[in-house]
Image (cartoon, rainbow, N blue to C red; front, side):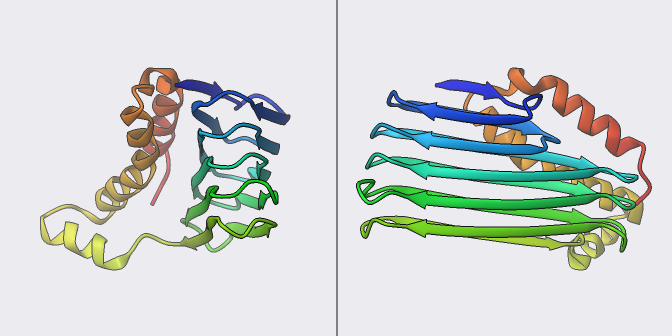
Length: 202
């Protein structure tokens, strides 16, 4: 198992050449990220978190390129955005002809807390092999009213309910990393996000 923190890199190309499980993590990263899978039996998880407020502007482009067969890539990005924050994402999954039996996933999910927030996602697939499984999707919206209502029926105030649901949305990323036994590698980001959430108005 290998962990790679790419948060502070502006332009990144990562070439994976040895069979293993890789966990790539970034927080509020803007730039281009290319992952090239050059060997079979490589399993790579790409996990990203965003917290945007005021006039923050994030722009991200990712490429998951499968060159060898029998490999897996799984990208999951979650973001929460306040005020006039902007997030632009363009993601490509590319499966080369020889990369049969590859599996590639791409999911981007954003929560907005202001009508002035802007989230734009552009997912793409380029598949040259015929025995693969690929999915991509993006969702953007507000916290579900029914979940807020449920917590309110349990005596929790609206602002507190929204905070709890937002933390749960973010914690899914942390829980995934914890399952890999790597939570200590991102302690500083977890503390940073929780502190940021304390200072916003829902």
